[in-house]
Image (cartoon, rainbow, N blue to C red; front, side, top):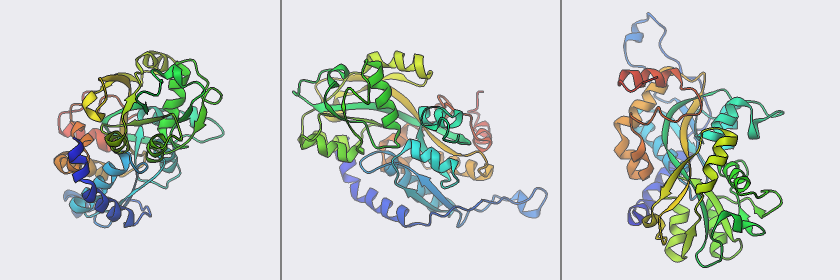
Length: 340
């Protein structure tokens, strides 16, 4: 797994460069009017700009998103670009504010955005968005140096801890995890707010004692860190029920295999679904075309990041915290995959 990620690094860099240089201005998609001669033919999305908001360097969203933008440009003729962001919270705000067309987000953040809770509570405004697909599961990493004497989340008290970038879904999960272990995330740790790559560098250099990151396996920054530094990922089993009881059934237990980062043993952590979402008013025909392109070319996405292998018709409609877009529903019905 390590080798495949490193071999793909130049390819991913090319994707990122191409995606980030593509136009980012949004424009409404138009379908042929009902009853017109063009209505019986497949709609064209040639030149349609799509701003796909993703995440930060060293994480999965930016890699997956760049691959998706490249695929849509190749197959649909769109002018899609992958924009690097601080991830879930900011992504939902960009969708809300009409500055993004497609977003990667965590299910708990999407729930907050739609319902006006958490970071979207008043005076913030709610978002009006729908899901296209449940993509894969994020796993909560709490990474420390092996042998540092930090054996559980409760041991983080008084330590220098990065809780993720401001405006990230990781920060929400970090706060909720610390609360589950009886810690005040604002008082009981020396709080840092770094992206995953900066967090990994800071841990390696002894500038922090631990960092949180919620991501799919493998997280590139954590994988790179583990090649030169012996790390430990903390068990978070006891946090899941407490978080679900307080915030809703959005969390589940999931294992990080020891082979992922060459750790001493498999570790159980909290998981949360990743969603691909669009504004509620997104063109249904384009929503269907995006999903068809993703499913029909999944092997191309998996070459960019292995998390794309988790996209299946059986799981894409299971575990979303928000309603599905009508275009997505129509696609899944056409494939016999809509069970609701």
